[in-house]
Amino acid sequence: MTVEERLTALESIFLNQKEILSFSEACVYTGISRSTMYKLTASKKIPHYKTVGLHFERAELDSWIRQHRVCPKDSTL
Image 1 (cartoon, helix red, strand yellow):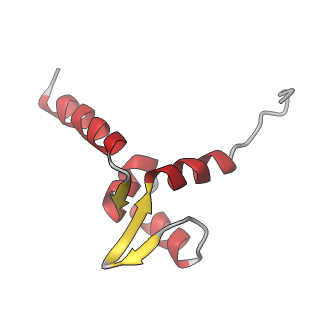
Image 2 (cartoon, one colour):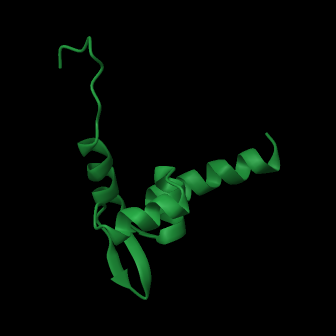
Image 3 (cartoon, rainbow, N blue to C red):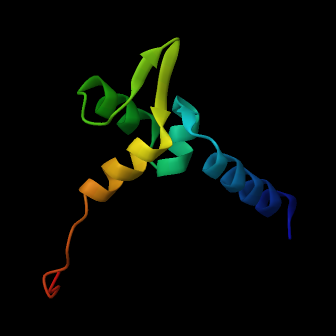
């Protein structure tokens, strides 16, 4: 396992343990680019907290992601 792979694995474990994420952590956690995340927060389309910077609750991000599910055309769900 390379150093980069180990670092990525450790980051993943760390992010899954935190309940409140910073802006950068939320971008990594969701896979959303910084510019898109700024647009989503500015338009209040994603749940966030504005303190000294932007913060996100991991459970709220998970819920927000689940709300944007797109079903395949052939799905019976």
